[in-house]
Structure formats: C-alpha cells, structure tokens
Length: 174
Image (cartoon, rainbow, N blue to C red; front, side, top):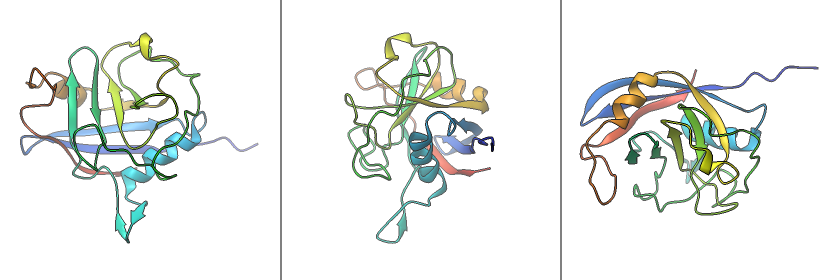
C-alpha cells in the first residue's frame, strides 16, 4: 500500500506593501482529498478560467479577529461574498472528523452546509464551536509568527477588515 504524501503549500504575505514573511501549510490530502486539492490548485494557479490562472496570488485577508481567526481567499470580490471552487461554484462538506482544537489550522469558510468555495480561515486559537460546521483540511507547519503578526493588525471595528492591506503576494507548492 502506498502512503499518501500530503502536499505542502506556501503564502508569502505583505502588510501595507512590506513583506511579513512566508507561511508553509500542510494540506491533509490523506483525510480531506477534495478540499485539499481545491486549495492546492488555488495556491499553484493550476486552475484556469479563460486561460488565466485563478487563485490566491494577490488576494487579501479581508477579515481578522484577534484570538479567533484570519479569513481570506475571496479573490472574486475581496469582501467575503465571493464563492468559487475548482469543482463549480460550491462543493459539499467533505468531512468533519478533524476538530478546530488548536491555533494554525486551515479550515473552509462557508455560508452554511455544503457551500465550500475559495474562502478559508486560519485559526488563532481553539474554536470548538466551529466543529461539525467547517471542514478542517490543513495546518500551518512554519510561519506561525507571520500569522500572529496578521492577527494583531489594526482593523476597522465594524468589518474586522485590516486597516492596511494584508496581501498574499506569492503562493505555490513546495
């Protein structure tokens, strides 16, 4: 039997035009293959629309809540309302086996059951109230310092949007 090797992807992130560093993430393809592949292709630019790569490059973190999470991935509208996946507009929840039990977990943002698309969040603390509602599909393996820097940025009180643009300037697979 062949052991699945989980892909490692990365984000290079800037704040207000200044580099914060690189975040490396392991995608749990062995446990959530469909969800992991959706995220991986948006990291690498393999997914194309009209022959143009579509994905996380130049995408922002549009919502940051200290002691909770960082949300990003809305490369369509940039405000948390855009939805697209490599499988169509949305795809079904794959598995709720993995729990939101520590900081640094990658999980799908959604608007209800079976509405996964391009948006994701990274936990900054355990978030057990999200269990059985959002699919955990990866974890930060290097660069938690960068996550903590983003977590502590100044945000607009009514939207939790960072006051300075927090941008994924480069992304891909290791």
